[in-house]
Length: 177
Length: 201
Image 1 (spheres, chains in turn cyan, blue):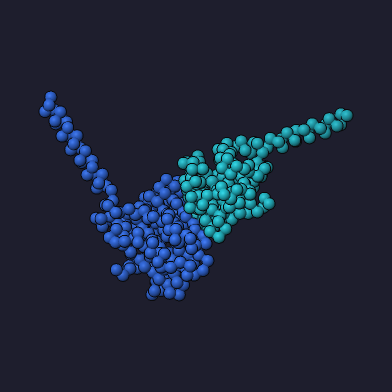
Image 2 (image 1 turned 30 degrees about the vertical axis):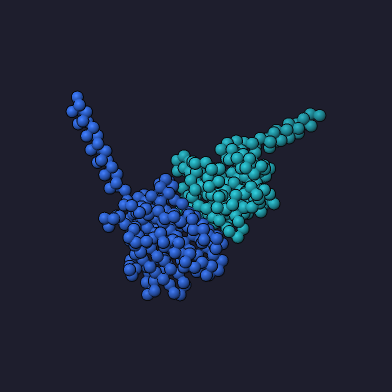
């Protein structure tokens, strides 16, 4: 009996910790959470479950100069709720709010995918980057902090980095399936 | 008392007119807005397979300059800190001939004299690549207010709009940065690099 108790305690502790981790990852950025909420309201759909887990681990394995990575994926969204591509830019601006400035946008007119990248200053020598990638059936929202070395790469070739971001969002959707 | 009031009123009026005059002098002359309307090139966008926009306005440029701390960036930084904005729009097409010269006219129409003058026109018959550089100078002919670059390749068309004072001789410092194409890689009809090559009027 005593042995059972000894095994049970760590197990309960592990389960409690496991329950807490995604919440902790989410609570790290309430602004991102509220942005996800706004997108959820818009699409009338919740993001893919367990994204908190993914974010928690992704945060530890992001490439050099990138930190505080967070991501939310909305799949199988109602295509009728996705704006016409001409209106998408302005509706995204109202969604992300005035503090973010549009930096790069990439439209793939064959797939109908639109990727918009916004930036804003975040503390000393840090840039906060928000990437929204939308097509007729999915939407991906990514937020991260860039250190100077990562931002320098964006400034060197913003068009190619924008294309990379679009491909990254595409991969995230595919890998999740 | 009345005389004093009159004096105050006429003094205020004079100050108002001086302020108006100074304000007018500090503004570019009518029609001298170096910012191009490159957002709405719908006809081109409809033919393209991909459209990329880069927007680096004043505050973002200021922010960007904080990150350009490399020794190599020093000269570019000197140019960037005076700029009001760098805007790039690039169209990629599936096949050569998917866009026409008439489509490019939508951009060229905004680059009319006397506000704008074409200072470089380079063409490569071999690769079918064209590069045109336009400058907008202040009416006094002194300072540069802005620059426009049209870079046309068979399957790609890029329009760059630099708003603010930029020295044409130092443009090479910005090439390959912030979405500005490397113009030095293109050659004109005589096989020379386009820098410093004056267009025929």
